[in-house]
Every structure is written in structure tokens, then in C-alpha cells.
Image (tube, rainbow, N blue to C red):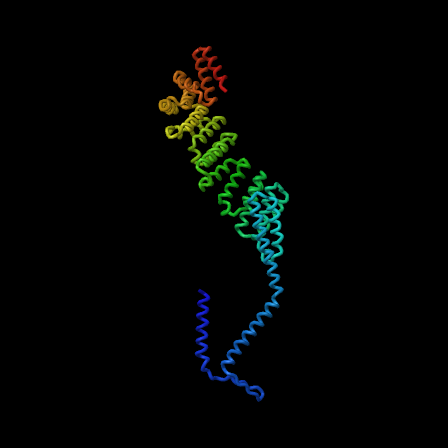
Length: 414
């Protein structure tokens, strides 16, 4: 289509020229030192156009000849630049293909070629990417000395302004490698250098979680994991398991009652509604000599026992049994209501029996204790406690043979 248009334009120009120049009788006269030259106006116009074309062509040819060395340098620089980009792409491909020795060599070659090209020598992002690929390959090869040299060089380059995206990438990679080396202080120092916006990113929060767990600070890890859960960084099941384990670990850390109270106050309200977390807190409180506080933490969940599943109900009941020391009479209505609601639940019956024994209501305690002791699915420590309580009951009634039988049954439980 383009050729047809040019052909039409050419015929149009020819027709216009024939119509305008065919009857042109004009002359062009030139005078010089007594000489006179007369030319047809048509010939003069054609000669002027031809002369202009020749002059322009000659000037263009001279310019191309003079600029030949510069173009040769540009061509060589372009070839080196293309080779540098090809080496960088090769390093990336080899790195993702787990051929780390080849990736390191390609990244080093890209860095070397970069220095030969003026346009790339000032491109800090290109240099940072090459250094990171080389350092990442050395990290995979466990060459920590050379890796740290390249990483420090990359950090210095990033501080000079290698671009926000690459700068953030350098620091996050440095944190990740520090965690791989189990170097918690260095990882936390690098995390502290992150900009506030970067520190809230999911990957940064993941690294912060790992650093907190490495430093054995479960409470900080719990708060970070809660943020990740809000960002939907985990599946619901994984988030639930992780948060529960971190909350339990945090509650196992305190060594006195005051520390336990402060930790409990810092635990999220969602964790305080988890029966497994509450049960562990109550057991820890009983171990530290404040079972009444443990029971206070258990009470909100015990009052809505029907909303819990079987596992949560069993965990809560066994924790109440562990924290039954010094139980007041205000718990008796709750205990009796649970006994009526769950007559065949061994864990609930074990808690009822332990509470009644603590209140020295031996007659009422016997039936729930026997049910708990004869339940093979109940936790071993709960069954042993039930048998020992039955042994005390038999001793109180003067039945030594029954007491010895109960103690023997408690000792046979693995």
C-alpha cells in the first residue's frame, strides 16, 4: 500500500511539473566582470536542485568519515554492554537453576564488563544486582568470607543510593543470610536499619519473626506472628497452630508470679480465649504458687464450656484439676453443673473429682474419680491423680487393702 501511494505522488509531481514548466519561457541571467550568462529558468532550477543534492551528499559523507572512530567506539561499547547484560541474565538463570558456581562466575563477569562501559559504570542498580547474585551464590556454597565481602560492598553501594527497590532487597537478603547463619544480633541490627514502610512488609515481618524466635523472645515473636496473621501470610490452620505454640512458649518463660501476670496481660485477647493457651497459663500459675489466679483465667471459658470442642474442653478441665489447690466454695455450682452436663466426659469428671477432693467432699468425689481412673483415653497424669485420690479416700475410710490396690494401679500407669 505504501508503494502505491508513493507511485501516485510521483505521477502527481510529474504532471504538475509538466504543466508548470512546459510553457515556462523565463531566463536566469548572471553578470560577472563584463560577462553575461543566460540560462533557461527550467535548467537553472534543475541545476540548483542537483547542486544542492550533491553538496548535501558530500557533507554527509565527510561527516560519516570523520565520525567513523566515534561510531566504532560506540559499537564496541554497545557490544560490551550487551555482553554484560547477557552475563547478568546468565547469572540469574544459573542461580535459579541451582548451579551456583556458574552463577557466581557469570555475575563476576558481568561486574567486570560493567566497568568497561561508561553508561553501565554509573548504573548502581546493575552493579548491585550483579553483586547480590554473586553473594547469593557464595552463600549457597557456604563461602561466608567472600560472601560477606560482596555483601558489605553491596551495602555500601546501597547507602550511596542504588535505588530504593534494590536497596531494600540488599538489606532483606542480608537479614535472611544472617538468620541462616544463626546470627541473631546481626539480623536484628539490619532489621532496625529498615525504613518503617519496608519493616511492615510481609517478608520483613517473617524475618523479624525468625529473629525473635532465634533470640528466644516468644512474646515479641507472638506479636509479629499476629501481624502476619492479620496480613494473611499464613493459612488459617497454620496461623492458629503458630500463634498457639508461641503464646504457650511465652507463658512458659516466666519464673515467678509477677512475670507471669505481666506476660498474661501482654498476650492478645484472642489468645486469652484459646482453651489450650488458658490451660497452660493456669498450670503455670499453679506451678508458681498462685493457682487462684490460674482459676480466674479459666473461669470465663469454664462458664461457656458448651461452646468448646472436645479437645479444648478436655484441656480446660485437666488444667482446672491441676489448679484445684485452695479452690473456694464459689466453684462448686460450676463444678456440679459441668458434672451434670458431661456425665461421660472423663476429663470433666476428673476435674470434678479433683475439685471435690480439694473441698473434702469425699462421698461426692468417689464416682467421678472412679470414672476418670477407669478411662484409658484420659491423660496418664490425670488417671494417676484419680487413683491416688481414690487411695486417699479408701485410707480415710480405713480400707487399707483398697488403698493399696489404688496406689498399685496408679503406679502401673505408664
